[in-house]
Image 1: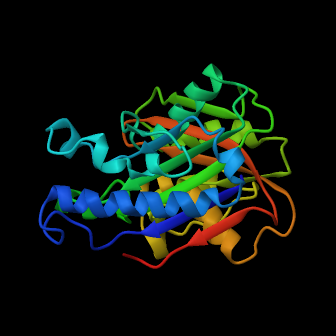
Image 2: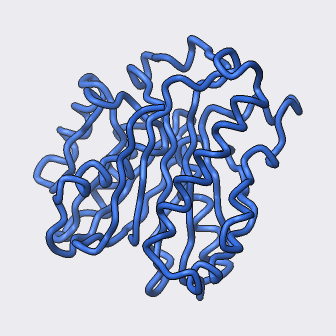
Amino acid sequence: MKSAAFTPIENITHLSSGNLQGAFGEIGKLILEQSCRVLESISPELRKEIRRHFICSTMIELPFTTGAITECELNPIEKYQGVPDASFINTYECASWGYSLRYYLRQKPDTRYVIVSILDVNVLDLSFWQSNENWGKSGFGLCTFLLEVESFHKDDISAGCTVTYNTTPEFATVIRKMATGRDELTISLPFFPENIRQIFTKLLSGFDKLPDLHGRWGHCFGSDPWLNIISHGVTGGFSQRKKILACSIALNGYYCTAEVCVDQHSAFYLSEAV
């Protein structure tokens, strides 16, 4: 991982911005600013090698499906250093980032850099998204990370769907199988309240895990595992090379994982809330 950033978004709604176009105009500027910051970790020449920028989301599809908003509102980034238009994906909810990366890297295994943004903002100010018994308190924000693909192996990124109704235990079991015998691997999980987190505590006991930050951030959907890495990184937590398994699961049972490496040269940014 070359760099990653997270910006909490608390006050951008269709009401505060006047309308949906105004809200997404503000969000588009944030995407541009955050992407520029993340891309500073590589040279302008290397930025030209980037062919795809995925924007993934769990909760902002409604303005797009109704036609109130188009991808144009999310694409000011095309004006910066030749980075292409962003592709908006929400089909797999919190796991969309993994499905996007897996598909693209299997199509383009020689890719050197790929940038992904995860955007979850309650622009419609819906009470459903404020909190839910399935994930507790929600957290909203924009996360962007830049990956350098040194060599792509098909097992580096996994994506699938649970086959039972006990999605969280099944997901934890999948992770346990991946991590067994991998003492060098640290697991970065989604943020959940204690009643759900205890499933991970039980089934992943003995494995090295980054701490759950639900108490601080709430559940930030697909951003959770990356926000955990960022939070650890900004405090200097990666003084040496470390392998991390970033893991996400969606309410509908889709899940994904990605094995990434971080070290003292990885750049991390955590901004104030907007």
